[in-house]
Image (cartoon, rainbow, N blue to C red; front, side, top):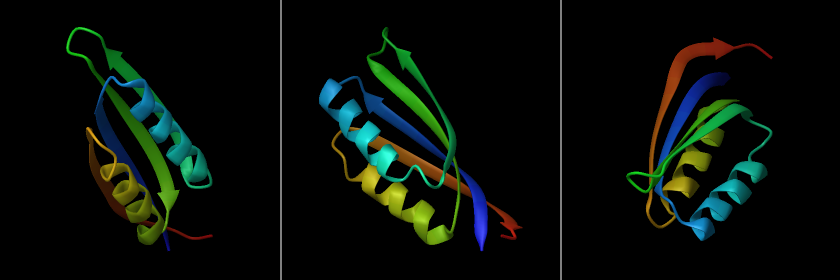
Length: 85
């Protein structure tokens, strides 16, 4: 069953890390409904909110791979609402 979820990402503003995140999100584009990024130049961090629709395994795989990147902090929340394909 597919579920709707949100993945919150916080990263220190670093071009290499941002590119790694971009590449990773692109490789999971089949489960991404939308995303929004907000840089905070004052504190030197950026936040990204990603809305996903996929199985628990797909969402966990994306969250896990994001969390393995240096200076990237990830939290995900998956709803209990099940989508019927």
